[in-house]
Length: 60
Image (tube, rainbow, N blue to C red; front, side):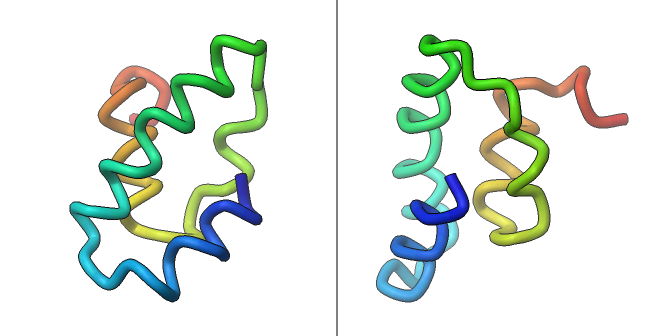
């Protein structure tokens, strides 16, 4: 996912637009048993918001 963030963040300036990109990618990866979502935290505020929105109980 870090490679996705690195590719999207420099070319999509708007945080809400990046979040709209990340949400379906996160959901697709999770359907394939992806379990390292937290490793990308801090790379992009939009990603952080997207993952927190999907899993509000994970982050206190």
